Image (cartoon, rainbow, N blue to C red; front, side, top):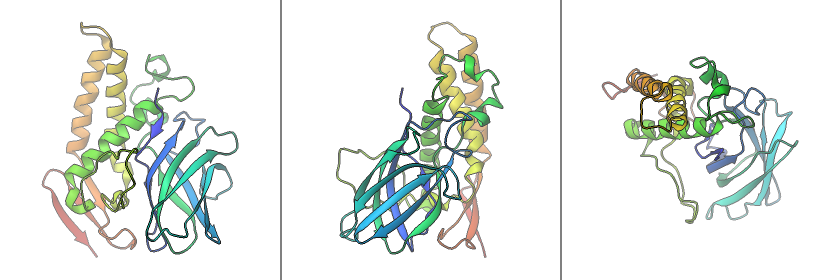
Length: 263
């Protein structure tokens, strides 16, 4: 079972730092998991040429779950890979690249998953009875896949607003300077939660369905596929044209693909 989240959105101020290619492993989406509704936070501090990134489960920075260090003396010309190791017996590991650094930063929101088990259970109360449910990690595998699918669709529909199309990055290749798509422009990612929830359940039901004949699993999978399509059709996303300026926001409706800026 893969519990790797490869599309965390770091809501950083790129006037101070820029990170990319986050990958977090073994995130639990159960109520006892480390995230707050799918969110974590991180800090970056530099001493000499060594940068330390610490990931926290709270915005106060009191509960660290992973950290890593890297030499960023040449960061302006070469992105620096930082490997994260677990802290506080969290089990969470991962990696990321630091692309730019000008100042330390604290309590940067990091959206790991668009939904977690408590959001999914609202639409299906018997999650723990699904064959696709994992007692240790919950619905993490499916929440991760659903988040990736939804964000890739967003980057396709809103490639102009986000600055480019999204695609999985092959981690066997040398890191490229990743500026786009800039998912930080999604001001209210909760607008994507319903789609992620229904995609999670669609994947889970079809994963549980292993017979050629129609079953309760296949019927529920079909139903949540329909609900996913409805959720996508209702998108009217709030988008920031310049995410480093919180006053610069706008909205874009998927039905018409119009982008309306607000001052």
